[in-house]
Length: 382
Ligand SMILES: *Cc1c(COP(=O)(O)O)cnc(C)c1O
Image (cartoon, rainbow, N blue to C red; front, side, top):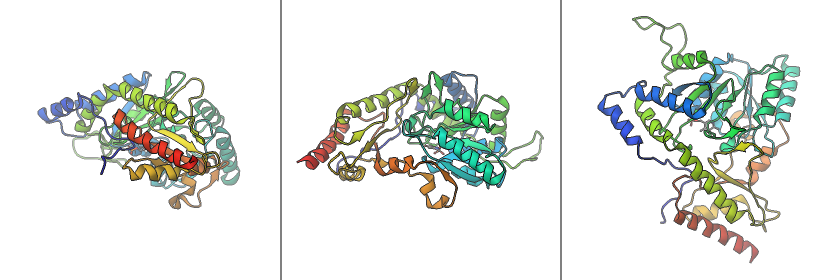
């Protein structure tokens, strides 16, 4: 069996182990410590904006605490991009709140500002109450149309909880993803552009929000010599060992972004002229970290090749590829939730594929990938 080519696997640099060793040498093996503080500062520096960062155990935890800090109550409605990973929407359910799903637009594949406004108007008409928060996502690193989304949100005075889990390093006109919400969430899960093995961060321009996140993430202990609690707490803080990995990864983040963008350019160079294949490009002023390179395959133009044809052919060669995120409004677990849009995400899900995109892919990996691609298209046109 040929070695596995993964969709997106961890890619350590040279410094991670040094930081982890330092954590061991100094016995800082706790969910706090100097690496946690240092990692938070590294992220602030990278985001290059007056924000505060709380390092957490996952991106999902960041979204959950974000909803708490925005005052979401049981029974409230929260608007969420439909086309996303389930972790964007699950925290709404943790709160006993109700998700309302909004479809994507075709330019960035993210939340449609027009469908967002339609959803808000209708929810106010139906429930006499505005939704409590809006969760847009920057899928695969491509920034959502945040200016338009923020304008709609401001009109109805609804705060934005930005899911930037896939978009560290992406930006719009120099403004970084992860700084575009009242509260933003980052992820350092194993498959993301950099990883702490598992981890996340809550980002906010409000120091109070970051401090509250740290407080809630460490079991909400009041200031007292004994254990006293006036709030329900969580065990969501990042450990000093994981933060050590993160500190090392921050030193190579720009290299990782450059490598993933080079992957995208190579795929475009090799595949853009194939009949039926299309890519999603950056709108003017947008910068995408190209966490994953994705394509659409239109079977009407590709001699019947579908995304499944290519996925199965890759799988046979032990190469991992994956359909795009299945929209939340089609997920059994969210059946019956309100949905607004024109089914753009259903078309994307039916025809889209994520290609191997790791920053550690080498030339011979791409040789194997393109051998499959060439064979699939040659067979179809033979
Ligand atoms: C990865 C991811 C998350 C969750 O992050 P974890 O760190 O895995 O909990 C949330 N939203 C999106 C869009 C993601 O891709």
